[in-house]
Length: 90
Image 1 (cartoon, rainbow, N blue to C red):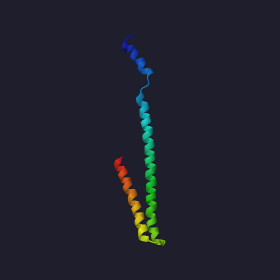
Image 2 (cartoon, one colour; image 1 turned 135 degrees about the vertical axis):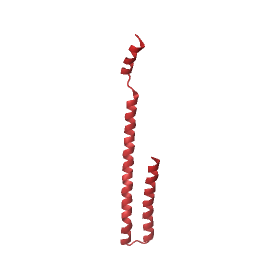
Image 3 (cartoon, one colour; image 1 turned 180 degrees about the horizontal axis):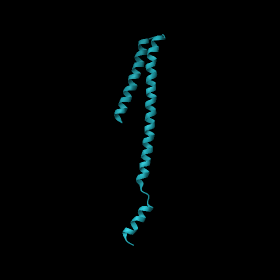
Image 4 (cartoon, one colour; image 1 turned 30 degrees about the horizontal axis):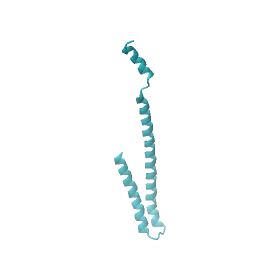
């Protein structure tokens, strides 16, 4: 038997590892993408809620309204900066 006759049988019997690895990587990246999208949407929703609270804070009496407004604005800034930094890392 020559090497040429044996080679096709060996390739047919042995499963090539590339498709399995590719499937695993696709699943991994899909999972990471879904988690990142969920985190992004949650942070954006939190940002919208906080921005919506800023005008409401002026209507309802608060002990120190300037501090409350400053803290809410700072939270919006932190969320937006964190999203931009994360976006640049990806």
